Length: 127
Image 1 (cartoon, rainbow, N blue to C red):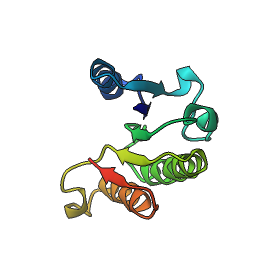
Image 2 (tube, helix red, strand yellow):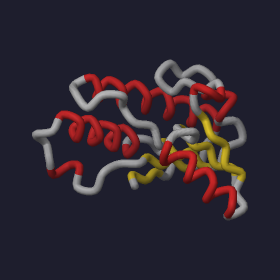
Image 3 (cartoon, rainbow, N blue to C red):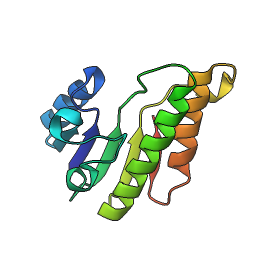
C-alpha cells in the first residue's frame, strides 16, 4: 500500500515512515525538503499521485490564533489535492479530548482541522 506521510521528515513523521516501511508499505515522506509545501499546496499533486492513504502529521508552528489559519489552509489544500489524486483514505494526528477544552485556542484550531476532515466524502480518521 502506498502511504503518503505529510510531515514525514519530522520527529513523529520520520518514525511513522520507518514503521510503515518495516511493515512492507511504500511510505513516502512529504515535506518541504522533499518539494511539498502543505501551506501553499506546492508539490501536493505530484506527491499524492498513486497514493492509497495520506497521513497528515504536520503541526502548526504556533499555538496561538494563527494555528487556526494554519490548520484551515493546510487541510483545504490537502483535501483538494487528495480528492483530485483519488486518495482513498485520509488520516490526521489529533489530540484525545480536544473538543472538551474549548478555552485553548490551539485546541479549537485542532477541532477545526477535524471538522474539515470529517466533511469530506472519502473515509477519514482523526487519530
